[in-house]
Image 1 (cartoon, rainbow, N blue to C red):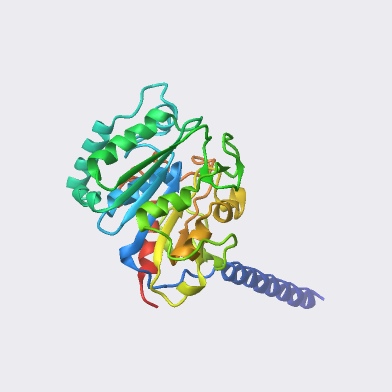
Image 2: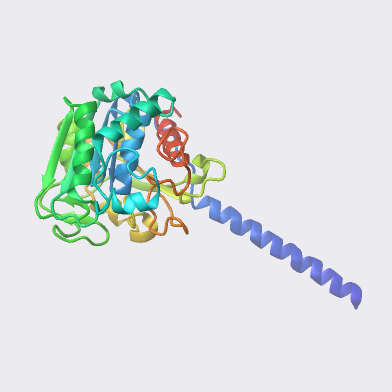
Amino acid sequence: MKKHKMTWLKASLLLTGLALLTACSSNESQHPELPKLNTNTERLYIAGLSSGGYLTHQLHLAWPDEVRGVAVFAAGPYACAKDGVSAALFNCMAVSRGAPSAEKSLQLIEGAAKEGELGDPKLVANSRVYLYKAEADPVVAQPVSIALEKTYAQLAPEGLKIHTQALAGHGLPTLSSGVACEKTATPYVNACGYSGAAESLNHLDGPAKKAVQNEAKGQLLSFNQNTFKAEKSKGLAEEGFYYVPEQCAAGGCGLQVVLHGCEQGAAEVGEDFMRLSGYLQQADARDLVLLFPQAKTSLPNPKGCWDWWGYESKAFATREGPQMQAIHAMWQHLNSAP
């Protein structure tokens, strides 16, 4: 009897182990690897809203030799919140403790570049820059956005375009998708009769090659972001997304990185930001692959923001920042030939 019980126990443990292995294997298969799509390195753009806007600016300064253009929606100047979350809240969103200074930002950029933490600031002048702010934005105060405008006016004066949306809340503006223009509400996509995706890309990439359709025709797919995580990094979600127009599967298309804002990742709003933003339709018309990296919530980052105040690393705004390195590795991977 005792021997029979031991045999049953061993069998039970074996089945449990097999079940766990199967579960792990199943979990991994839900997030396939990001493919190499041989994207055109001469057409690499980055866009981001709010925390994604801050990260867009950081990435641009870190690799100005690679990035051909950026669109920053509702964000402030470089290293605005280098002193931590308090500065982020009261100097770089609200300005109750003083607005950020473009002059200070430019000094920090020059200093970081000399240390090799950023690229050569002079190369920023070779790119195009689109900046957006909303008049009724209760999250990012006007002086914060204006400080970024003044920063880029020094770095890329000839390629700079600024748009201010009247009576708009905090969100990405679209022609008709999302909440009312004046609202600040999930999924932070605002129907303003103005397409931020289209107008920013008109400036960065020129006119669309084809007519923009109402429905997206390509594939929105998920991929395993763990492949790109720096060791001990906890800021990235396991799952990221990318969009491939039908004509881009064979390679040769441009690449647009699109960075969500706080409370706007897939864990919070599903695919709403990606599908309502207008970027998918623009990608179809312009032969662009889209990359949608995903941040995740944590104790120091409860709203799933990108790191622009140092919650994950003191090097958050440099080439050594874990999220900076991960996203850089993602776009270089997509640039590679299969």
